[in-house]
Image (cartoon, rainbow, N blue to C red; front, side, top):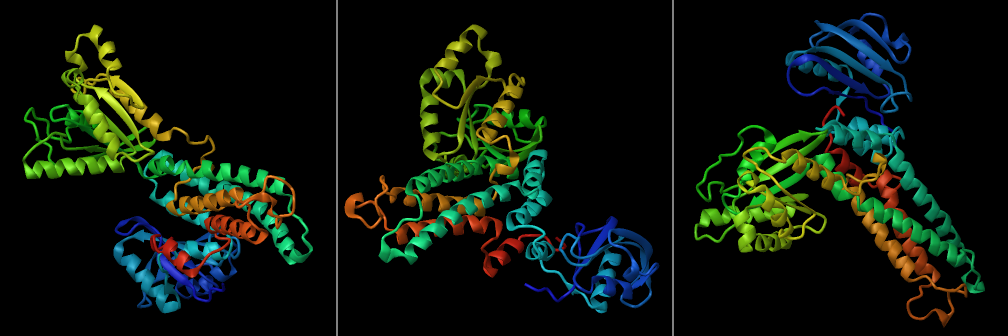
Length: 475
């Protein structure tokens, strides 16, 4: 795809700041900037060099002192000629600079157009381009590390390796179709079964990292639930280390969810304090309870707070059953026995053994801060459980997860239709479940296409427009 226009945009965040950077990319980038530039001729400058001069505004008058950095194609982010102009961060200067560039021959960039051009010019594949957006949006060390690992391309290389193995086998099946009348076999069925089994396991393993990877990228949603006066708001305040929620002995004080975020060891935790779970005739409180159960469904981890009295009366078991009914299949449950400072120490172990089965249990005191650090570590451990050590092989993108799921279904169907012996495929000896070569080839094509969409080996204009429209202008 040939790009003929030269685009421009402010690449730094909108608003006033110390420095603003305008990015210009396209075949005429250097020539256009030269029209409004006073200083060493940029058309004679070597690539990857920076030059001090002045920039004219749209009225032709000097606008500001500027630093222009030159990148010659193809050794630039977009693969085109690029000029990055650093000026003072006045909003007026930024607006006038863009007007001046447009008057000189640029057009305004669309959202994500710089990165889209980098993809089209093969400076990035599609997965790496999406990781650029994740890196910009990263709000924690963990999210940043995931994005950096994806940008480096190891995830893409892994996907391409799987895809290439399938393409090799698919070519042999296609060859069989060309000689179908001669009843010959080019693709070794035992090898195809072993290959498909291995790739299916890898695809499923990658897909299984999505929930944890998404939680690390976007923040780990943690719902704090329990009966009224269990200490939910006190726990929220204890985790945040400031009074975010109102604490009261009056049941039903919290009638809606209260949310805040916390950075712990490089991970963003999205804490959600919910309304107390109980039977009530109050319609407003009931609405809060329904919202609380809805947040349980969305949460990666649910912390059920209970008390000594609730454990003794069997109410904790009832709550645990109710919560499990609303949890998603990949979420975790922590049960915390609260107000441990009011319970005799020698009775706490026995109470903990009476707690319902959960991913983790412990005794805490939200008011006194007892075992809050332990609870925090349990949250982190559960959120990151099952993630591979190699961060480049963690799925954080919903589109990638969908593609992996599609590939998994295709490979599963392929394996179900493979014969157990090496007789010709068209033989009736395989029974009703064996598939003919054309159907096996179709399942392989579906798996290959699904994997190809991840890195952009197969794309559509609609897919690209959807992906890059989510980028900020200037990136």
